Length: 108
Image (cartoon, rainbow, N blue to C red; front, side, top):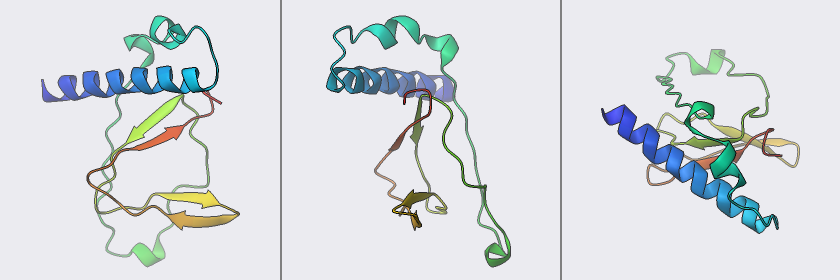
């Protein structure tokens, strides 16, 4: 039940964000995403990556883009998220009071 409630809340947030993004891009019909991106096109993925005892010897994921539409991420204190800025990898400091929103390839 808790996961269902969380998934519904995040899906609602994604719809609101999509509406705002469309509006700010100048689209007149900002209801497009609400009409065409229903619950069957949304999914919840839960990942947990515990701290690695030999982190200095392990490489993470290869450089990639998010292929989906929007990613709403809550990062725990283990961290590990990096973004490429000006050709350099920058570590995103975890903030337990914040969500990270990535615009994916489908939105672009």
